[in-house]
Length: 477
Ligand SMILES: Nc1nc2c(c(=O)[nH]1)N(C=O)[C@@H](CNc1ccc(C(=O)N[C@@H](CCC(=O)O)C(=O)O)cc1)CN2
Ligand SMILES: Nc1nc2c(ncn2[C@@H]2O[C@H](COP(=O)(O)OP(=O)(O)OP(=O)(O)O)[C@@H](O)[C@H]2O)c(=O)[nH]1
Ligand SMILES: [Mg+2]
Image (tube, rainbow, N blue to C red; front, side):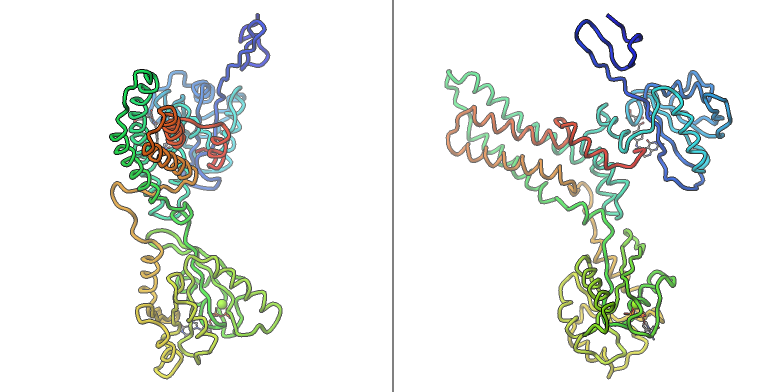
């Protein structure tokens, strides 16, 4: 028999013929801030070697938990000075991961960050973390459930204010506690039923009527939650707005005016813009992706023209909102009329450009008749007239006021699919209850529903699923 210390691999111990695998979690280190120059950077450390790192690099053998300490970091092997920094030590289990943890706040030079990470990795059993590994450990150590862990990624990545606020609600456990309550309700009935299954010989008559009531209630709640599913993209992704229209309509000028910089080339030569150009515009509720396209003419003059126009059409297709710009000053062509005709849906707007040039007899006068007054917008990239109103309209259309108070959207496909499973199970139960069912059958279906609900919050989950979830995270999260 060999004991743990003698074993060549620290994580294995051999006892008799059997192999016992004792997984000693390694200590992980990672930057928690982006790789770039900043005032400060943050580095996270979590695992059993944390105190050893403090001892070897800061000479601190007995750290006080949760106290910001100013100290000098030195290389554990050669004692070389690495940085003068602030650290905070967290004692297990009172940390984000539930393990001994450490946060370092060095000067925000990527070279210093790299030196510190390299130095810590010199200590045995210390390595760089995988993406999402801190949150994965937090999940395994019971600090949060799977819904909360998944929402952490959305809190960080969401590009809209509504998306951030929703993810924060999910992180706070609102959805999780709704799911727990549902699971509880199903288990309550299951418990009664299991009694009936056990004592079926005694012919105890299950109170089927009362159960139906309960399951109708459960179904209502699940369907309400399902009706609050929103594709994560639509809530968390910056909306795509495409500017299109005839050559020379003033698309590029409008884009520059909105961005308040000369971002793209403008000229009086029709066909100035060739490739479509994607920019970011910050609105109060989040950023939008604003796309300038090549003008679309009746007929392509060249192969290049044709390709540019194809690209423009593809951009319009992918837009959350496509804005057709019509030049107020020019004759209103048949082509523009066609474009206006197809720009009637909610996702398409018609905007008259160059309002500083308009006169009653010009294009805009004639065009107006074709566009319902509520949708009519005029602006001038040159004078700025109408721009504020246009931006406000964009904000209102692209960021509708989010749910207030307790309401939240489910945005995760996995969670939604599991909830649909639960819903189908409840439907089957309701169906069975109408048909004087065998208790075993009912009990089986109830276990299915319970399992589907449990999988949402990760009480049941496979390593594969967890791997997929956490590998999508940032490093250091
Ligand atoms: N410095 C720092 N700021 C941060 C984080 C962090 O890890 N470190 N967070 C990382 O996401 C977010 C805050 N979330 C956190 C969640 C739990 C714990 C934590 O230490 N929990 C302990 C103690 C709880 C308590 O004192 O009430 C625990 O759960 O036992 C820390 C931060 C955002 N800001
Ligand atoms: N007076 C006036 N001229 C404008 C306005 N907006 C654009 N122009 C002029 O219209 C011409 C075409 O502008 P662009 O912004 O390049 O038009 P575009 O739609 O991007 O054109 P293409 O890229 O060729 O399809 C330029 O000479 C601009 O200076 C405006 O609001 N008022
Ligand atoms: Mg252009």
